[in-house]
Image (cartoon, rainbow, N blue to C red; front, side):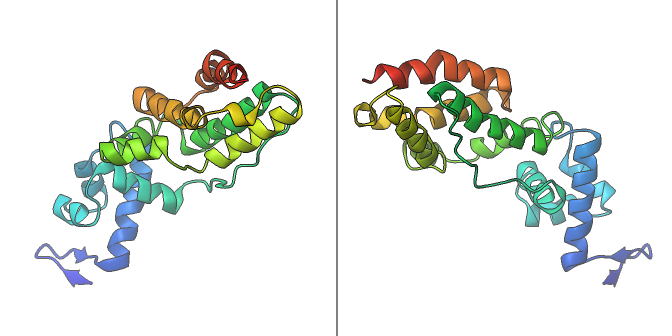
Amino acid sequence: MATTDKGQTRRRGQALEDAVLKAAWDLVNTVGYEKLTMAGVAAKAQATKPVLYRRWPDKASLVTSAFLRFGPKIERDLPVPDTGSLRADLLGLFGQLVVTFNALGAEKLQGLVADRLKQIPVDKLFALANGHSMLEPKITKILQQAEQRGELTVASQTARTLNLPVVLLINEVLGHGTLTTASLTAMVDEILVPVFMGQK
């Protein structure tokens, strides 16, 4: 550690990172993501904005790092429901995403996921929506279960229909900044079930 002209101890390395991330986490829980500023974090951590920007290029990156350090641990490997119907299976899978967003703190972190998605170049965002994602094998498994029950035929599903859930989820997050049970239920009832079951 070094000492400033005012006699304050200047933190470096891990000590500085710890102080900044703690300040960011405290502020996001106090004022929320939307009202949090890099200047506010710098002041609370007794650091400077240039120091913050050298480590985190923007607010979204900083708050994401703070969440990973101090936030609740989230289950990455979501189990695939097998409830007895396509609709209930889809609602069960997507319901786990709502739980994840609630764990993030829907109000306090409103806009964070949208900001992170907006930072992805358009071509990569389209690739994410139209390529392989962590949800694709889970959706496929749900469709296979539905086929065994006679609800649909998996072979008749196209690549576009398989990618549709991810496209809808990205659109919802970018448009509204979060996911809710009501919005996901509408997605399932108004779009996904009619599309999947119509591909016979």
